[in-house]
Length: 602
Ligand code: BDP
Image 1 (cartoon, rainbow, N blue to C red):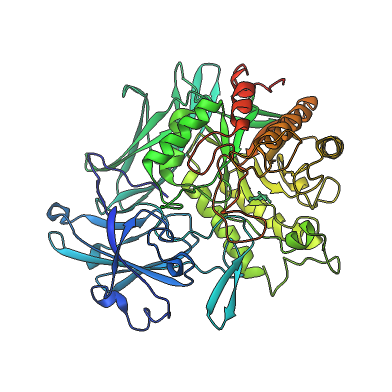
Image 2 (cartoon, helix red, strand yellow):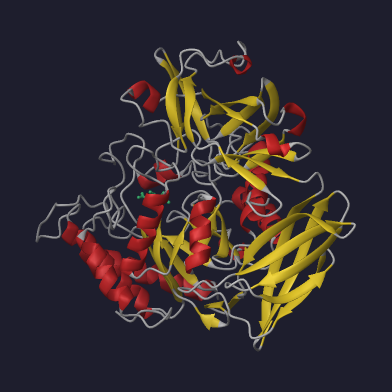
C-alpha cells in the first residue's frame, strides 16, 4: 500500500490535532449510532496518541472496549473531480470508520494502515464529519491474542505480551486526493552488477493510462528511465544504500493519458542486496553484524503515539551509542519511523504484532511447563484457524507496507511463540510460505523463546536466520553470572551444531532500577546489568556464527501491572525518559570502537 504523498498531481490534508473523544464504557455507541451526530459528552483527545495516559482517570487508562473519535474538516474546494481517500495510518486494535454517518471501512490489526475511497460521500468545499470507533479488545482471533475476564466490576483485558495495551489512534490520519485514474502500488527490487544498479519495478494502476518511470538521484538528477508498468532500469555508477549512510533514489512513476500526466508518485528506494550465506549475514555482499536493541514505541503521556521529537531523539541516542540496527519489537512501527531508518541507513528487523502466542510461557517461566505434551496454544479453542488467518493477513499487510524499504532486511513473523510442538510447526509452516510469497527477496525468521532451546524448537529449521531471546543471568541463573555464561555458551554451541545459519541475539537483558547501586552483584543494580551484559557480549564474541546483539531493551517501558514489574519493564539501557544507565556507556564504548559493521571483539 502506497504511503500518501503530496506532489504535483496529488494533494494531502492532515487531520492531525485535537479530535472529540468519548470512551464507550457500556458498549452502547454502535447501537445508539453515535456516528450519526456530533459526539455528545466528548472530551478533547490528541491524534496521534494513545488515549490511556492523557487524562488523570484510571478508568480510561484501563478502559476495555470501544472508544469514539470524531473530527470535522472541510474538503478542499479544489478537489472537485478528484478521487478522495481517507487514510488511517493505524487504529489499535480494530476500528470502524464513518464519513457523515455512512460506514466506509473496518480494519482489524492495530499497527498497520487502512484507507477507503470516500469520493461519493463528500462534497469539495463542504464540511465533512469523520467518526471512528476504536476497539482495544484482544481475543483468540486477534494478533496479538488476549482474553477478557468478566468481573462484577466490569471486564478486564488479559494478554500475554509484556507491554501495556496502549490503544487509540497512534498515528496520523489524512485525506488525500488523486486523479480518478491513479498509481495504486509499486514494488521495487534491486541488485547491482559491478557499478551498475539494477532496478526491477512493477507498477499497478487503476484506470486507463500509460506508465513511465524515471529514476532520480538524491540531488534530483534523472539517472535512468523506462516505459511500461513493469520492467528493469539500470543506474550507471550507482550509489548503494549502505548501513550508516542510507542513500536513496526516487522512482518517479507517471501515469499519462493522451500525452498528459494525470497522476504521479515518487517511490523512494535504495539499491542494496541482502543475502544469507552460511553463517554470514550479507548486506551488499559484505558481512553485517547487528548492534542495537529491541525497542518499543513507548513514552510517558502519549504512549505509542507517533511523535517526531521523541522519534528523532531516539535515533540520535542510537547514533550516540553506536547502534546500527534495531528490531521493531513487537509490532510494525510508524511509517515516519521506518522512513527515518531508510533515510539514515539504520538496519531494521521488521516484526509483525504476533507476540504472546505462547500459553505455556507463564507456566514455563514459573516452573509449570507443558501439561500433556500437546500444544497449549495452537488448539481450535485458542489460536486456531481464525487466529492463523489473521496472522497471515498481518504478514501480508506488513510486507505490502514496507516491501520497498531498504532498511528492512529481515521479516520477523513472530516473537517467542510456542515452537516446540508439532502443532506449532504445522501452524508456522504456511505462514513462512505467506511471507516468502509476498517477498522472495528478504530472509524470513521468527524469534525463538528460551523454553524451546536448540534441539527442542521445531520452527527454527524453517527460518533463514536463527533469532533467539535469552535471559541467562536473569530469569534463569538469577544473580549468578558464571553459571549463566556456562549455560549460554553451551546453548550457543548446540545451535551451531544443528543450524548452519547466522545467529542473532534479539534479546538478552536484566531489569535495572536507574540509580540503584551495589558492589555485591545484586540484581536490579546498574552494576549487575553492566556486568551481566559485558559477560554476555564476551561469550558472543567467542562464536563466529553469532551475527548480532540487540539488547533488551533500548529504554524502560510500560507494562500491565504485575509482581514482576515496577511501573513497567526496567531492562532499558536508557530510562523511560531516555537517560543513560551505566550499561549504555559500556555499549557505547564497545560499539563505537567497531570498524564499519564488523563483529566487535570485546
Ligand atoms: C521476552 C519478551 C519481551 C519481554 C522480555 C522481558 O520477548 O517482550 O519484555 O522477555 O521479560 O520474553 O523483559
